[in-house]
View 1 (cartoon, helix red, strand yellow):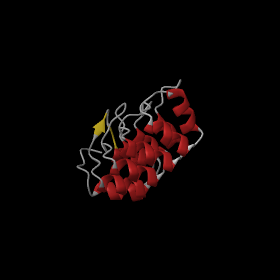
View 2 (tube, helix red, strand yellow; view 1 turned 60 degrees about the vertical axis):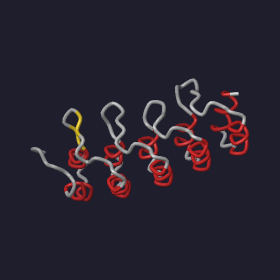
View 3 (cartoon, rainbow, N blue to C red; view 1 turned 180 degrees about the vertical axis):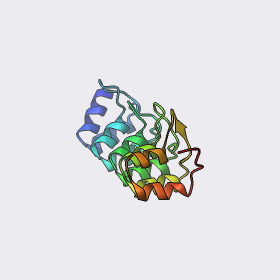
View 4 (cartoon, rainbow, N blue to C red; view 1 turned 120 degrees about the vertical axis):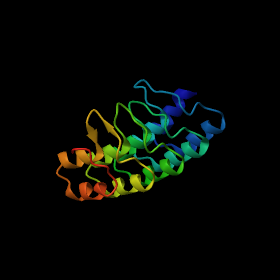
Length: 157
C-alpha cells in the first residue's frame, strides 16, 4: 500500500491519496531515494497534496535529504512555506548546519526572509562562520542585508 501511496503522491492523485490515507497508509513511508510523501509533494509543487498530508498528520519536520521547510523555501513556494509554518514546522530546523532562513537568503528572496523572521526564524544563528547576514553579504544582496541588520547582533562580520 505504501508504494501505491508514493505513486499517487508523485502523480498528483489527490482523491487516491485521500482514500489511502483513510485506510491508514504510512504518511512517512520512504521511496527508493529516501524521500517521504511530504517532500515529494513539495518538490513537485502539489499544494493540495501538501495540505492533505499536513491535515492527515504528516510531521512538517520529517523530510528526506533536507527539511520540508527548507525544500519549500528553495522552491520559493510561499504558499507551501506558509502551510508548513501553520502546521508548526520548526522555522529554525538545521540540516547540515543550514536553516530555512539561510536558504531564503541564498535564493535572494526578501519576502521569504521577512516571512521566516516574522515567524520566529533566528537571524543570529551561525554555523562554521556562516550566518544569514554573511550569506546576504556574500550574495551582494543589499536589501536582505539591510533587513537582517535590524535583527542581527554583528560580531565582526
